[in-house]
Length: 449
Ligand code: NDP
Ligand code: 2IT
Image 1 (cartoon, protein in one colour):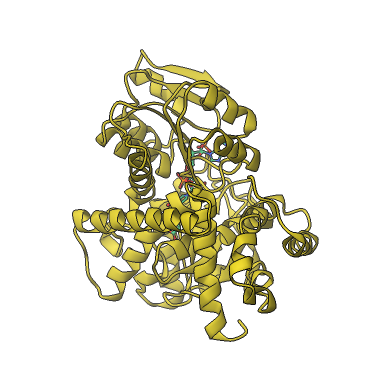
Image 2: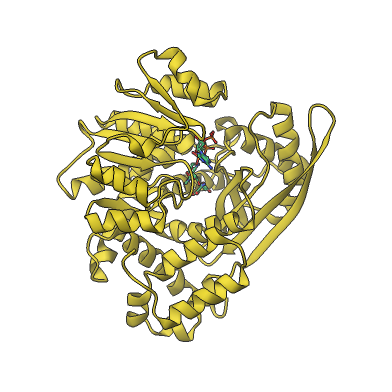
């Protein structure tokens, strides 16, 4: 990223690092936001006196708890659960739960911090929060997943609520897990309170289009961004990392818009299918059978499976990183550029390292950060909350059109904010500044919060 921090910002940042030792992903996320704020402080010096940035970098509340559970053989396991309730300035804490062995406080804190600005960009009344566990769902039976979710909720239930904190899915948490969590919440409280979780099944208060929303939203945003350069997805070669919820529905929307997705991945390898990735196969393998992606070649003999391959080595016009943080580094970025990639938009949270972002931006290609481009998921979660509040159920097309509108507005906000602050075309600064200013300007009238 081209901009550096001035002395004031440097000093705030070093206090954050000192206060949160070892939490490298959190440091990275804070640095990324703070690096874009110098121009804001020039325009709004009262933020300094009000200690807005210091307040925004300290979570309102951080919960860490024990999650004991018993596997199918009767052995006891102990995992660690987290919920970081970062900011409730513009609405109840809102953000997903991640179940992945790499989870520790630094990951949840970084995700929760990002969520504040992302949620602000949606224009809806949702604050920032995130949670999860170092539990590894891979290879676990349905019963093991259920027992883990039940144990997780035995602690979490007292901290959440439709107007307090509303968790949803993230890596390793999808419809199945939300179902078990909701069932346990209902037993513990004796209340059928659908607004307490989003990403629910359709039969108990879920919203049509929530499952598709993050991937679709990413592609709606990217399509608008391409149009600013008089381009579109039509005929473009696209690669999408990951093969989970976000990746699958990003691939679906790209295909609907005339693009050709030739590769996707999981943490073991890459599938390259020059005929275009077959989504029925991906959905069957990942959503129904819960198998590894390498099985794809059993159904498509023309496709190649590259064990431990790097998806960024594949030549493309558009790259959509949809797996996890720091999955795309500067070397990957250089190869993408060399192979002709003209547009990178993030479905995952913080997938490109700062050096990769710098590489894209100095080459002048289109680059948009996750807090703008993947906001469609949480925005549609807020639409689910709206439906729950009025006990309503909207049509798919209606919800999808609202999602499209929201993504159009986010694009416009980022684009115009970048222009306003003299960095036209810089979606990273546009997103960070717009999200930050919205929260900051709401904090002040609320008093010292
Ligand atoms: P899923 O669990 O459905 O899928 C995750 C995918 O990413 C899998 O293909 C997984 O492969 C891969 N992956 C995960 N961790 C790693 C890793 N350490 N290294 C390599 N590959 C990895 O998650 P989602 O699709 O929901 O989430 C993907 C990204 O999108 C995350 O960054 C998430 O925070 C973000 N996001 C999700 C939203 C949502 O609504 N779900 C909303 C906004 C952002 P494997 O199976 O091998 O682990
Ligand atoms: O990162 C995210 O925005 C999500 N994982 C979805 C959060 C939500 O509340 O739907």
